Image 1: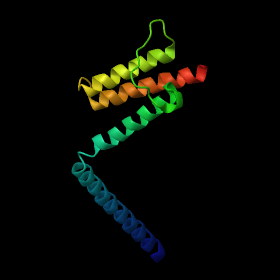
Image 2 (image 1 turned 180 degrees about the vertical axis):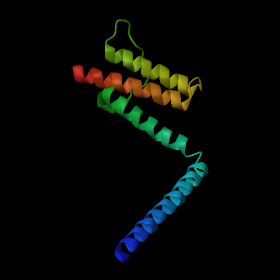
Image 3 (image 1 turned 30 degrees about the vertical axis):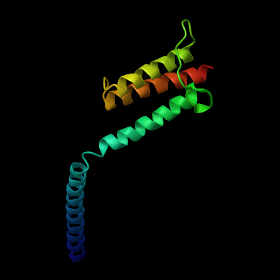
Length: 120
């Protein structure tokens, strides 16, 4: 009987420690996220850079973008994707598109490019 009381008391103590620790970690994380409010665009910029690199590797020969390209009429799907990418880059450079929207459009272009390379 005495052992059961100690076991129940120990379980309650361990649960209390876990709950208190969880609350401390939760408040630390909340403070960290509030303090790093300007870090999200940095992470988003890194994601955009990686997507641009991946698109360049898929769409351009050797992953290197040529100087000035124009999308010829009646071009193939690869040239159409290159045209969409260049238009998107111009829109972002002229601040017509936000960073988050730019990232979403790059993601869509990357999916199209992966489908294109899978069928080729």
